[in-house]
Image (cartoon, rainbow, N blue to C red; front, side):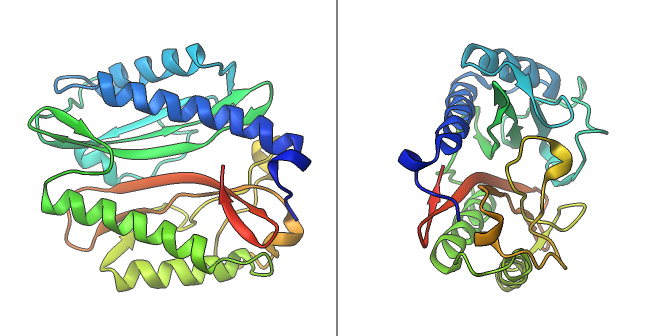
Length: 240
């Protein structure tokens, strides 16, 4: 089972990379403005991640995956991703940013959908009803995970529980593989996924894991994503 910070040096090192991602997201909130392209936002994110300590990118060499507006519903592998120079942020819009810093081989993985309303950027408190519905659904899914997940559950159990809740909320899972997250590893190919058919017991795997539902309202225009890294500190799920 994954131990707490003081007993597990790897958790501490992953937390350092995750803090770099969180700091970068804060800087993006202060910097993003209408008229910027995906490519411009990606460039700023990479520079910020490097300033905050990242010295490589674990996700197929992609440090920041940026999708604006209608492209927020697109689910794409890092192998195929490109940042568009033509897709421009509007006065009222969304931008999903998925950050993948690595500090001395240890991963961070952090994503947020940011909301632009009349030129101002918000992370969690937009005014638009559609935006509010999206962020509220994401927060409720993370809350369900932290309240219901136990070390003896399998990744399949989490997959079923969360996808049932996504349906109940009136949303759809946009992920191209329908998974909801993955373990934090040393190499990409080692990842285990929160996916259908994965009967590995989370506590026995003993690795931190991401939770990153990518969803949209059944009749909605925009996609929403919120990603954090979790680990079990004893029987309690903690956020990195």
